Image (cartoon, rainbow, N blue to C red):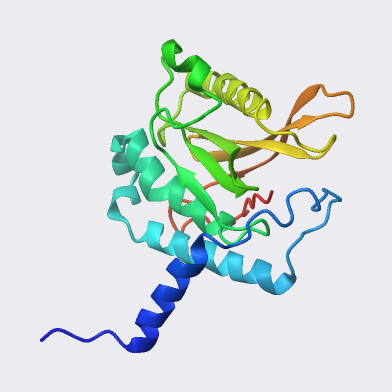
Length: 228
């Protein structure tokens, strides 16, 4: 027997669709300056932390990541779809500037159009709608769970180029966050940022890094939050 959806649920869906195009997602982009303080309240940070920990719980229940043998067998695509993207979504949900889109679509990046003939493949990006425009504010590169040093170095250079290309399509305030670069090399996730100084010269910084616990045996957990 088929269950009937309540009228309140239907009304909620209709309300979401009706309000989607009218939602304001650009209200705070230029008013949130970096001053070494969190922009969210402690309550909000706890909510995000709980969501992130629940995501880790789902990952820890996946038998594909239980042993060193099974870990070595997983492809880059599985690593991205089953671990990296869920973790990024749990951390980047409900940003102050509105909802974002995390995409792995091929050749979607506007900034990479000039590089299409240079072998550019899939783009892993964070997209945000601002004043009717799609802003590419984050790029990511990821390896397999087992990563060699040459792959790590190559992705580091590639990510720097992607953020540099992305900077040309936005106009960030001087000495404030511009384009975010996230590199996953093995089980280490690194947070980088490309900032344009007051003279207009882009500068690339490594802000922080953390280990991704693939099982509950990792008794220490350093959460790497990314806020724009």
